[in-house]
Length: 418
Image 1: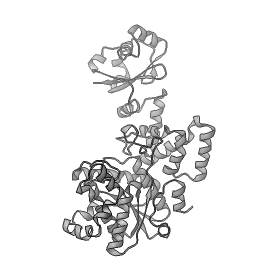
Image 2: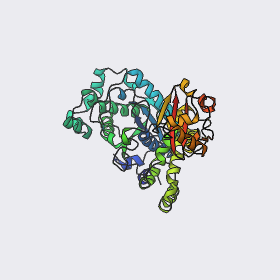
Image 3: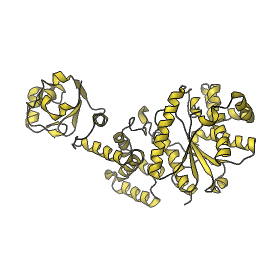
Image 4: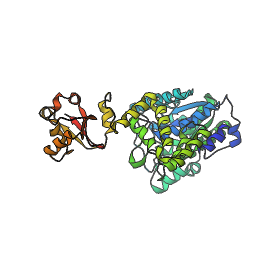
């Protein structure tokens, strides 16, 4: 398959400006995709255009990854019903730094060479007069108002002149890259199509050039929500915001009906490999082999092999695996959502295992706690405790600021020492 056929089979192609023109692009041509630095971390939705860019890079085109130091200063109105808060320059610069580091890390694993650019570099010195003369002159008000994302904002809410001007800045980016980087193609999410085609318009009107574009469908879950944003929280690529364990668990918990779709979109597995996994979903869904494959592939891509090992070790802890070597932050990530108790270290020094089991309500009373412990049903950091009188201050667990209690197989409680 050529790269167009590959993208079509994977469900990664929606709007196309000129199919014949795109298919004629060669190894001397470059293309670009932009990333918005509105948050400290990219999220899994941003992986989609980066993966599409990797497919094009493998097909011989030259990827340019644009970080929006300039466009991120005014806010992209696409897909938004309200104005974005304006970020200060230091925050934007820090977000760009963090984003570029993560993309570089991912592309190094994919062996993709890309040119990283920041549009602030060519817009910061342009005066408002020059910008209006050189760019604004080529856009009519009726043309800009005809864009669906602008029309929606005007009709339903409102849009400031700042965000209204966003498409002009993005068009200026395409023109600059066309003239200075031999960039003939722009790709982006389908919600960006209005901005993207405005760039084609500027290149045609200002310099008589021919450029191309295609969009990528927005990836939605089975509930019609943006993929990775269910329940109001995003799945981030930064391991400090979404741990490798939670990242791995997100993919592992995908429903059977959707996992093959996501394997096509997010993985680089060949058709035969995905077809084989689809058969396994149908014949033995309880094994969740497709989900496990996708979880391992994506966690390794974003966090490296060490991240995948960490995620799997963390998962094993929930099934009674060893806690040895896990950091306090990892324990908090693993046991996020389970009941927890904070106890002063001075108080802990006076407590036995039976005391703490009763204190945390893992046992209804100290007598019940003693019976639970002597019968082999109590665990400290996943190690069975048989002595109800065990002094917690003398245990290895008390040397840290967090430890884990368990009664039975799955009844966990996290204890934090203050």
